[in-house]
Length: 361
Ligand code: PMP
Image (tube, rainbow, N blue to C red; front, top):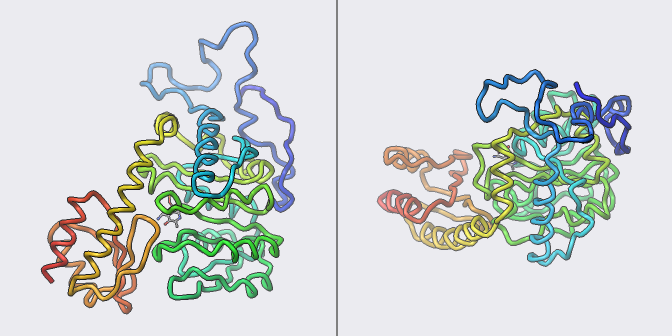
């Protein structure tokens, strides 16, 4: 183990109490500052030099990639009318192995047994799963309205949960939360408000991360599995005030993200134009597919969506899923009683095959 700076950084006041006594593992494995020559021979980490290109541990603090991501976030927020975020430096970002790992870390870093975690169903099941695994009590305040994008603000505020998990845009309803309601919650909740923005990029809304400078209890989770097209690499990001990032890091392992994942993310963030162009294609394709689906006999209803999937209601969901599977096409059946299914928008020719099979029913 190499030395490194073990001085404690400021810890978020809502962090799990045990973390006040712990050192951030990143500091423990950081290489010592360079003296006369850059290190050439690595005899400090028990790796096997006869191994292949990945025989070394990944970079412990991928600051360059984090900086590229904050530049992207600043651009994204400005382009979407959310203003500039020059204060959002790399200290506000930590990378995780998928946003699912980020969700787990946030619940553990801020939640303790007996604390209350609030969900707004229908919600990504892992919020509740991990909360229960760590003996938090879960209170659910179902989303309201036809698009399931309205919050029971007063009831959530009255519960004063330690952690509140929100999802925007919603999966599977595909609608963003009302920014006014989210702001109302942030102004009145003393606990952590975690907003899962796994599906933000294909929408045209700015990230709630722009509000972090005003609300140190706000944590935003982003995923590189969806719009960024990197699901196989397992990459996500936690965006929060540095004291909250410190809490997460004190809890986490020093090496969350692998070298191939970091290298690929560096490349993708170095030139975001191609992937951003794909988001525009997906927006256009979503509208085309939604219109075509709405004309099919098998389809009862297509819900409007701001992201790259559609929630649809089918007259006979089981028959549609079967016919599609027969043609080698997978969709996600949801509630059999409501006849709902979720369809990811894909390449034009694949979407056309979906429309053709459903059109025959
Ligand atoms: N949040 C939401 C709302 C999701 O739907 C998913 C995946 N289905 C995740 C988080 C996790 O995504 P990942 O771990 O691949 O980043």
